Amino acid sequence: RRDRATSEQGDLHGLPVRFAPEVKVRDWREDKTGERYPLLHRRYETPAGVLTTSVIKTEDWVQGDRVPLFDDFVIPRARKRLITGPGDLPALRYLLTPPSKDDIVAFRGAAKPAKALAAKRDLLTVGEWGVLFDAACWLCGMEEITVAALDNPGFVEELLAVIGEWNRQRMEVVLGEGVDLFIRRAWYETADFWSPALYRKFILPWLTRDVQTAHQAGAKLAIITTAAYTPFLDLYLESGLDALIGLDPVQDARADFALTKRKLAGRICLWGGVNGFVTMERGTPDEVRSAVRDAMRILAPGGGFILSPVDNVTTDDARTWANVQTFIQTWRECRSA
Image 1 (cartoon, rainbow, N blue to C red):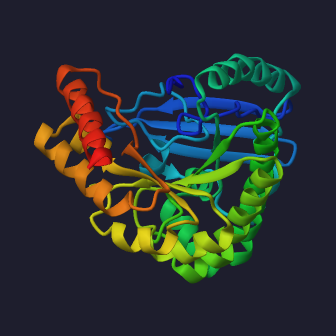
Image 2 (image 1 turned 180 degrees about the vertical axis):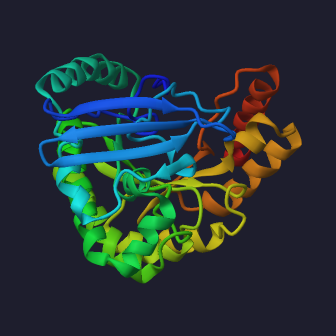
């Protein structure tokens, strides 16, 4: 797990994010009389110009007196976004550099025993994470980048090209180790932000390229998205996507499991079905049983379904473990029915 207190990428798993060696980074704190929260500032000096950002330091801020590059905490607390227009993109390229030789060597060293264990236990090997629009949200803000897609589409296309090319370089390193599945973050690539027409214009071309890159390496590609994905089911089919991770009836009450199964069955693997936090960690055994039975009834027929808590289970206590046992037992009962 990444330590948010020191990491530049608290919400981006995978290879380290590295700045070009010429980049100078300065963080500082500003306390203003009468203001509830102090301001945290960061300044990047690059050969192509200066980038600055500022956030408020709320009580739950755990990153110290610094502003990391890729972190969900930044989005709602930013008072000045890091990237605000096309003039910032030359400097951004100095923050998004290809994996270093040392990072590649370290990754290959870590991958070797993991692959050996997977082969011994017949386990799936997973590489993570690809990213596109989620990174744009960290850099620009959700509302800002969504509005820019309408008002300044050229800027958004260029920004996504910068991120997309950087992502490809990282993907190729991970795929080079022969993983079975590569997972791409798509939590913000949803109908909460995009219409199907805008998704087709801005997101689909890059998703399709990522799918092709994975397939050329002999891997499958999955996206993880937990809400407002139903309007994009036909676009997922068009992209060649292999798996949709994140089917969750709690995070998205609008989710239509029956429609999703009907449209994607036999072509895209469905992964999830039960909420992790509310149901598995906080729910009763009866609620877990009901959720598992519903998921299996709708999503399992004909195969192509992986039952899993969404996004995960992190609490280590007696109630959670009891619910995990209930989850497994109910799954077994459904399989044998």
